Image 1 (cartoon, helix red, strand yellow):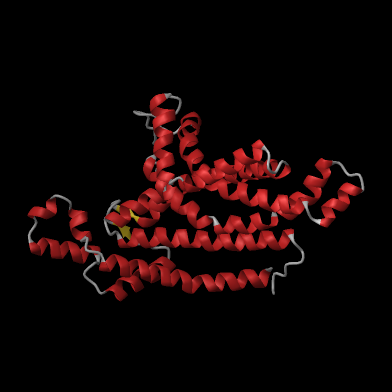
Image 2 (cartoon, helix red, strand yellow):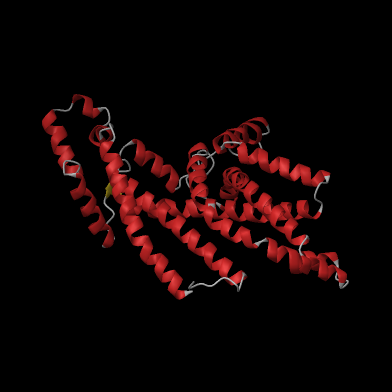
Length: 321
């Protein structure tokens, strides 16, 4: 286990370096001018001399490789640069927002895994039944639905039509403090939509895995020994059928991050994803590089976590193979 983890961490270093360089390269090739985005309407009347001075202050007058290398060396010492669009250090932007993003993504992912597993098991136990057809139909429908469409639909129905939940934000209008009650009510819609976008994969994988396990010889043997259906399902079929789901957990992290970006935008959730959108539209090099590194690191850690879970659940899998 330690050897595999070490190899993965060493492999992550060049990946993160390549990702950050790609971010700077793409932003450098962008037709948008970060200086004009920073200056706003004042840039329309500013002289070329003032614009050049602002360009030097922001550090965007230097070559691509120099900007990237200065950002890398600064990041190694904890200095992630200064965000032009947020008008504050990048480290402060991330510190203020990462907790809200982790809360949203973790809650939604946990709900998707639990609900998807439960629905998949129920469908696998009664394959071909009305319940099975209902679960699979729901899963395929949610899988095909764009997440931003689900978000807008949830706002229209639960917030505008029924008035049960707020349409977005973190607190009620006019409130300057975050209370547990406000946080809970404002979190239900974005977390529910994000969970709904991930649920189909777990429901379908569990249905297929548990269904196949129920037809295997060990499960048939357990039934022949007179074990109860509950014991057969939980002690034999479920463990075998859930092994592919452990790998699925890591592979869903990239789409979870993409979905969180859209959900945070639709619901005005003050997380990292919303800051990434602002950084991309304003060509904010330091903030865009930092948020991209965080997303890439989350994907790499998710894959590592899934492999570790799979190896622990199935002793036949060698960690150092």
